[in-house]
Amino acid sequence: MKRLLTTLALAAAAGSALAQATPVGLWKTIDDETKAERSLVRITEAGGVLSGRIEKFLDPQTKADVVCVKCTDDRAGKPVLGMTIIRGAKADAGRQHWEGGDILDPNNGTVYKLRLKPVDGGKALEVRGYVGPFFRNQQWIRVE
Image 1 (cartoon, one colour):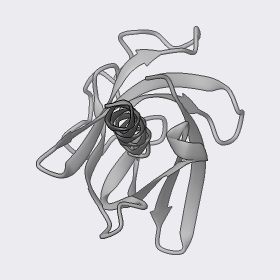
Image 2: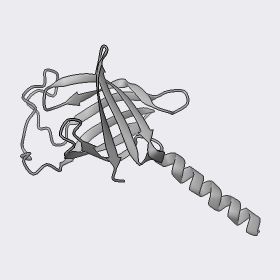
Image 3: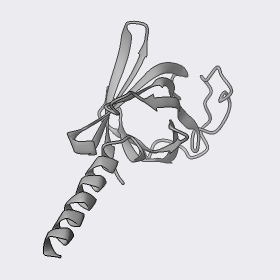
Image 4: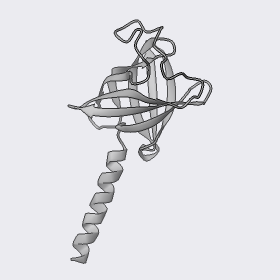
């Protein structure tokens, strides 16, 4: 009985660690240029596809009613708070990273191809947006 309980406890701990090694959750975004905390983004999964939306602004300079004036797609003129900025990312075969979707930078309206990679045991998320050979990296911090 003691061995069974130990095995179940280890399996539960492993499952919890594995669950944290995905991009699904709430993330604190960190600006790649200023290193300032910018927002909270919640990433969700539906049917194996990830999406992420801005849940809260952390920068006190950002007004809650700001709209995406530089967006050129269906998000043009829409409120940034609550906006879906990550669309269509899917896990690779080994679930080491998620890609194939895109990410929007609402500050400049640029839509980048996307790669998400959990690092540090899922405590951080490497976010890479790229257009052709050019890319930007950010490291987001898991909040929950």
